[in-house]
Image 1 (spheres, rainbow, N blue to C red):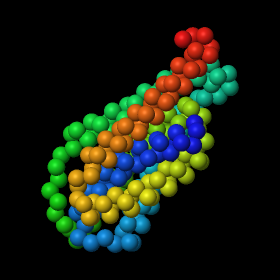
Image 2: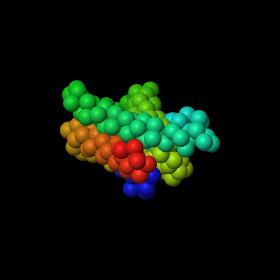
Image 3: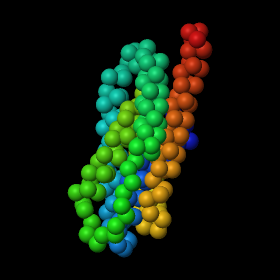
Image 4: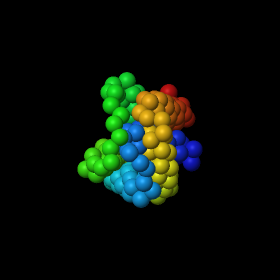
Length: 199
């Protein structure tokens, strides 16, 4: 995958994290730099772990001649994964329930930990899709890390200042970006099939 494709997917995935941290920021009584740093580390850790796990799982059987023979299958699976993640983001935006904004002094760390874990599930499937496309895993992990840290900070601050209204647009933009990634992979598939004379 090209650099811009990895960035596209990283940003698309991170908008789920953004929506989660907007919720956190909207409920905080005050913003603490220490707590923001802890949340950055927590969300980034889960995103990278999920990405690497999905990548390792998908890359495991891709060896030797079997890998070459099954390239079209991997492209189809990658397309389905990214398009599926895009649709999932749109569904989240349409089904999002309104949350009463009530400032709180105590942070619910179990809830934050669970949010970090749940938002990383997207990264698990994206890691599989990237493995099918022979993407450099450490570059992908670095992109996910940087984008996640930035998005957590921006999400908390925007939630704190603007409230929960920015969640749904974030999910929609994430859905658009991941859908574009799926379409990009689909174009690769058709190009490969046309070159091999199968399309």
